[in-house]
Image (cartoon, rainbow, N blue to C red; front, side, top):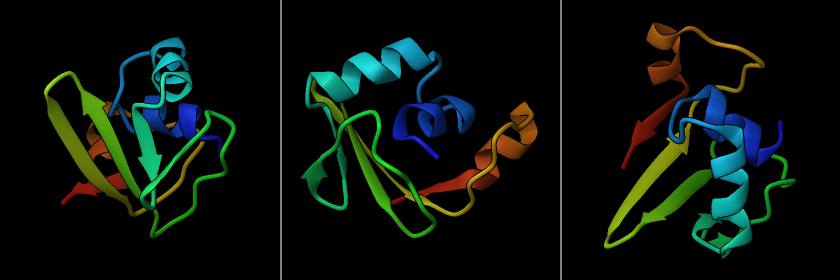
Length: 79
């Protein structure tokens, strides 16, 4: 699954366009390397997102095309 879609489906970022812009600006890293929105995300990857002065780090636990709000929390875990 594409990185920007995973960020939206898992609700780490609310909109796919915002996720895409964050990737283009270099604020998203996967496994310690800056990532483009088209990067393929798989289980076990560590995603780091820089929100201004705050940073969020999460590990991918599951990949699904769609999810409900309750299920979205089970797709990743904060580190």
